[in-house]
Length: 166
Image (tube, rainbow, N blue to C red; front, side, top):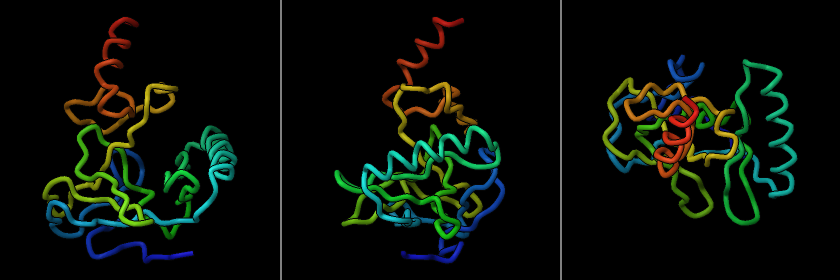
């Protein structure tokens, strides 16, 4: 398996206001730069389902652990990035992200959506759907945050749903 140092030329790991640890810009990062690759163990979809269930169960019982770090690679395989040598697993969600993921060949890269200033936290939108949204509270603090980690395309629907509950 591929292993990286905890930091690369663009990033450093620090405490985050969003969620425990986070990834921050070590220097200014230009728009469209490949910030960091999401690395881990290449596993089958069947194995991904098993591990996801195991990780979810563990995260419910231990508030100090994150959830699931499995990222879709293609139709047959996923990447399990739940390893200390994968610093990209610490990139937190934001409803106003400065990065997005892009498949380049068989590699998952975090790409800068805009210029990122030194010291700024690296974030992306996790893109969750509305299923079980209550299990994924958002602490990003951005102006357009709806309080839960959902894809931008679901925000308006979630806002209406939450307004009905009041």
